[in-house]
Length: 216
Image 1 (cartoon, rainbow, N blue to C red):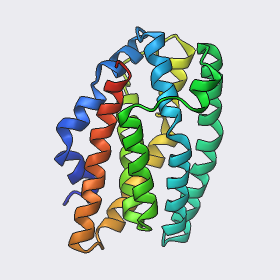
Image 2: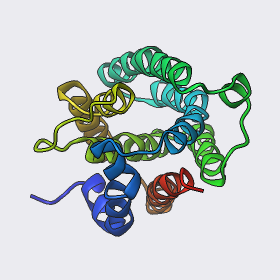
Image 3: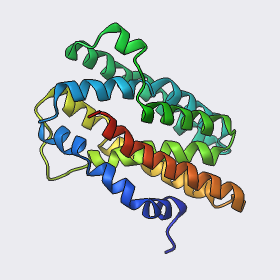
């Protein structure tokens, strides 16, 4: 069976992808040794994605050409706007994050870059472009959050962050994004396909840079 576009791009950018999935941050998150200041810095920056990410998901709803797939996209928007937002606020309370850092922190360079990338994909009006960035954001996180042989950390914040990005429901969501991306990408003209590939690769690079920035 010929691999789909998603699998080919995952392989093409595999070195950077694997470096992100195996990053020090991920290992320390899993073994419970992650410094609280690093965790707080990471979550403060990650929260800056939420609005742009929801807007990107909305664009995926709007640009989707399949009614059933549109419903799946729309349902996921509600989950991100609910459970994930609640996690951030409860974690900020537990970590003592200031109001200023919750609402208007200084953004690290990868944060600024990722928000700009999401906005670029959203304003393209192209479903495949939206999916390329969404897929990396969700699939790469599922990858690092899936360790069947490893016990979850005791710390409730670390454990919940992992749980938000793994399990049957999240696996189904990522499988859906992969299938939709493959279906949509198969019909692209070469110049558009090249642009979509570049978006995918840029998203992977920014994921790695984002983990690095937590230690800056």
